[in-house]
Length: 591
Image 1 (cartoon, rainbow, N blue to C red):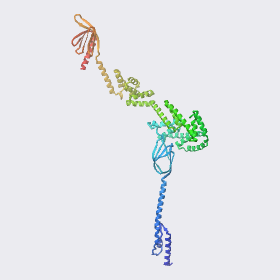
Image 2: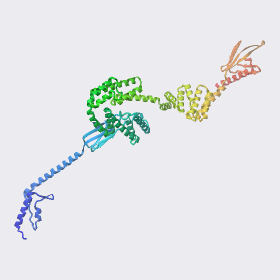
Image 3: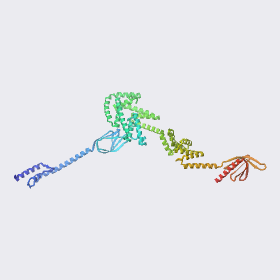
Image 4: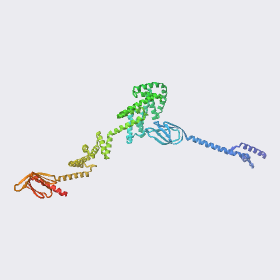
């Protein structure tokens, strides 16, 4: 079919005007009509855009820029929303712990923090009598953070081994449970010792089982208290369950109880009257459910700020504290401890009474330690080893009196007395060391030898030393030392046997001459020389040059300047001559 060229050009112009008017875009590329031209068969001519079309490009660029900014803002807002945690809940078991995040305090647990920025935080959790928590934690979502607090290790068990601590905690938990001291007050309760046990041994089945038993008993007791109208005790027990177990059943029971309490608010006046009447009759905390404190607590359940009930409660506490202080001043430690234990149980917030109780318990513990024979034994032996003999004696004596008198204890006690110069007491204990192969017995025998030697009883000393040597000696007295002691004493004994002793004999001095006169007297030889003391005269001479000659019953002494003759029994004359010879030999040795 033939196409007229002018018709074709007219149609093309019409199409171009339509496209330019609508500013259509195809596949993201502005449609300017050249595409149509290119699509026309055998049309070599190129259609040019009109000058007005170029105004569209700045508008397109501005639109693209606005779109980009909107996209960035959207992404930023979305990112900012995801970096903020709507709500963070921090829980602890037990509750009531102070929470601090990055140096800012948020009160006590349970804690709820709104709109917190995600990130890492320095978390500090503290509660009296519990180990503090101080760590870096990541916060990225609303998942609650729950921490189980560990009670502080009691000072009196720090020195024990882990096994000893676990055994002690178990026994203490069993005792507290048997005495119905379950959780209130927490310190020294079954729950307290179970917490210590689990802290040291998280998988301890005994502790886990008993902890569940405590929970069940607390529930049962709370339910029974509520049934009997003791709303104060029920509320206290449920609060303990929530605090120590985060127990949801207890929380719901608290809510139900609020309804009951609201219905009974009219009982406040009657309860106040009963509290005042019990107080006037001195029924402060007894008998059960009929005492002033019981009625005051019931009032405070309905009205926590009731001034009269708070006043009665304070007066009761003050009177109980005065009674406990009176026991303490009189030195009646056990009665004072019992009284303060009751106060702490009834008034858990009384920190002053709790402090006094701890002091009294520490005093009692120190007194008990002073009576503990095992402690006395070890401390006494330690003092002995450190050569503090004065300190060793009283501890070792008390240990011996309390059936801890082992051979080592008795020997150390005797040796301490010996070192202090109290030899009689030392001997009394040395002889109590039982005969055995024990080193203490061998050392005791040698020590008895030392004491005998101090008292110049050398024969007895040698006897003890030789007995110790036959037994093999000891660390304190080796065989070589015993041999030296024995040799020294025996040498002295021999020297003593060889030492001359003074001899005095009765003689008749022959004067000589025609008349043959004589006189009687005493003739003595000693270390000073020879001396005659007669009935008519006295004379003496030193030992130098003195000689003796004996013929029959006559003894002649050759002195330095004279010769004298005596009538004397021959046996006496021989004793005199021997003594004279020993003194003369001693004189020569001394030269």
